[in-house]
Length: 254
Length: 250
Image 1 (spheres, chains in turn green, blue):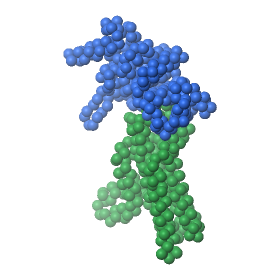
Image 2: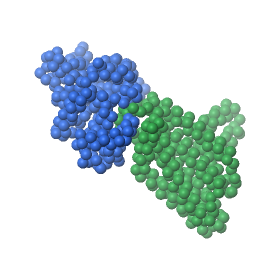
Image 3: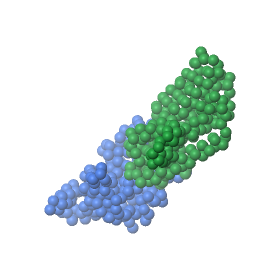
Image 4: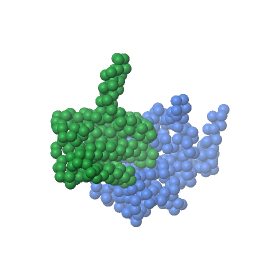
């Protein structure tokens, strides 16, 4: 595992040198900061707006950074042929994938911390110190971002970068619409179609499980049990995705 | 004692649904400990494919590989290998010492040993004065030199070099040749692939000639010159290939 950590640190260092990371982070901070300028609204509405925009930006821009970092993690090494000297060293291919995942998770975490701190500072400026529910929402967003990154990395072990880009965004959208999709399925009369639909939805990651921001914004409390259950759901999904990624990369010709 | 052995090694690439390309065909080869073994062949003859197979970067379609008695994916075997890829490309934001440290860590080498070896290797390949320069500012020749240094970070028993003098100027080529001979004398087995015949002629103790994925012949240079009644390596190379092409046409 020490070798996976060496690869992780290198991946982290490499990602921080890419302009995409800084551009997305700056845009995210600008968008979060812009929510402050809705001062024409009543104080309560303005605070709600800051929370709404803050959570949405952390999630959306975090997802973009997760996808773009994971997208090139494997293909970048293959295209630049840095993979040849790497795989000739005494490392297992699984170390490479675990290292890449750890490295990109560090990138996601750093970006998440910057955005979250900025968001919290904004709330403090508005004299509304964040309560525990704000942190619960942030924890779930972070797990969602790591999961998005893990799935993108897994797909990168067997698919092209172009396919992965389209697939990851498709999954991001569909993963947030699973609850709506399930409701529509309930109204479908054809049982075979209904079963197929349910099977399809049960395989896909349900990103809406990590979305408690709508409740938190309006002051509804969310239990730790809910948070814990969905953190476990996320971690389990990540482990399965990681194992699939390792399986495919073990068979991949580079 | 054979330090590298291949038996019936083949590699077939499947392109699309039906098209198959045979990159390597039934190659059986023994490389003895302490020799400098040269793989010669025109472009597309299977040289790089052979090296990638030996390093476990790609998987054989058929056949077996043993490196110091272990298979090519064995961590124990890889600990004893240093590899220089063709046209080496490394993480260009790192400096020479940083890239050596990165690879050194992958060999579980202690930091103090890496630091000592870094200074020694940078001096050996003539890059000590460029130690603070990021690799993106390196010339092709400098990249080749740092590649050679990274391949030596673990003080390997086996050095596998793919076209080690590509991009080097004549002085660089000579320095590399001298270095390979010196490393060989210190006990390292060297396997190098090249299409520079003069380079192979000057350093290799035994050679193998590849063409279209086939191993045409293998042996010492003098032995092969006699066998093919050739005047020099270039003549031998042409005769071996012509003999194969004529036999194939029939």
